[in-house]
Image (cartoon, rainbow, N blue to C red; front, side, top):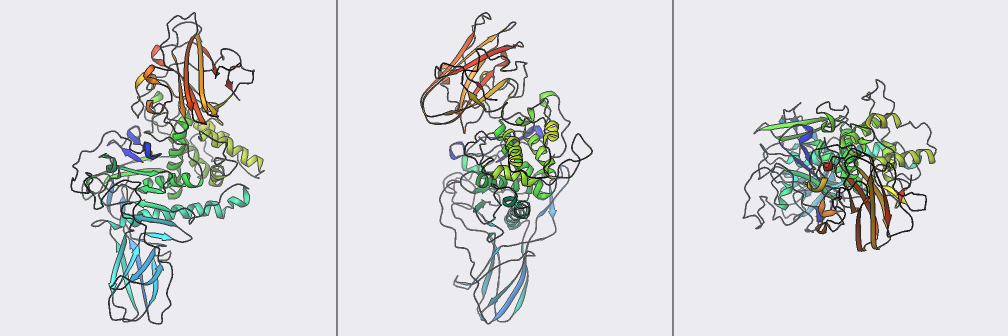
Length: 633
């Protein structure tokens, strides 16, 4: 889901991800003003559909027209195309019509005057078609629909889930002789059906890239547990309507595009309040379309632990979110063979603008922790989505890296995919809290364990992007085997780092000022169910006493969001203030009753508002155990 502010700077790109129905409606900053139509279904949504919900079970989609009939009659031929808009350079936005492109691998159905099906077919790679029809003197109508169910694609572009009807362009004629129908075209303006077919074409291009990089490169033949991409396996429903903002389902006036995991439903922004010329649209923004499709791929072929929530290019964010968004940014660039993320607003027929993010080179704008997309210290890149994106770009492209004139790795998408989809990678049941750090570790294990010859060392690129391999900075496993000592020395770095407020608005008690890497430790704990008690003790050696806090999250929680924390925060559980007596140890405790079995994140956080700059040691105990717990590294 993409939510934008008006500025073209990376630091103002506000991104949101829908991760489940309970978290579905996320407000984004700087909403656009606009009226609502109280006459459309009574829900205040301006749309030609009677809108109910993005997850409503509408009527079944009409069966795909796949069976060709055999006739001795006339031959009808022609070509189908759509017209996109030109994407201007820099901040130019969307301009006039671009060169027409073929509508490829799309369904064709010919209907008689009574709506009965006469013939079925599909366009070819050039958008051309040739059909046999019975000779007749009554008009028939040829429909070319924005969907395909074949070996190349299994997707439909439709207006709304309340109707589930694909778009179509059509032409009527009398089949009294063999003839060419010429070109049937979907326009870039007017009804803007070119937008629907552009969305469909971007899905097809993505599938072609994946097929080339997994099947042609012998994913399953080279890696024993790797999954070849199969375009027909999982159905995708894309919903788009000219002038409609999918955020309106929640009453939001901010233009948004998003994918809802688990549903196979992707929503593309068509405008706001029926305006396409001056409001934000995404139907010709290929970066946005393929970015959202990447979330579908992650959902269906891999496993995503992204908690969703707001994020921006200059923020340190939850590594799970950084991985998911970083991968989606990268994938759209890989498909387009262009290292940029381009998003436009409006078009030249109204008012238009755009921004472009360079995904190959680090930005030099900003300074310190406010630098737009540059890690400021070792291992910080795991917490930055554009650092994840740039790293993945350097795995597949053949251009120089930021720190070297010679690219050491190129065209290794297969290794990324094998790690994401392999049963000894991300899809393994033993994995949780997946991030780029885990990808590094799993990939290294896969290529070495399966003895893949000729693989390159990723470590130089990890150094460039300040990535850490493994989990020792996020979701470290805990052990309580008696080897841990009281007051774990050096368990956390207390050098204060003040960062900008978290995008999700969690400003209370340190979330806006505690550096996610150096002022926090994160532990992975597998709970078997029932009561869970965690005790934290800490002691500052000298100077200003630190203020440590203890937070427990479930596996789908958003880091730093009070609504998702398991603690009883109404009673300040886990966040009590220290007594300022530096000579004595401080403590925090969280007790949870009847906690469901599952994987949990234990977050030990230093609230930097105290200004403490001295070393503080701490220890953890779980369920009053005999032994302390410490990282299993």
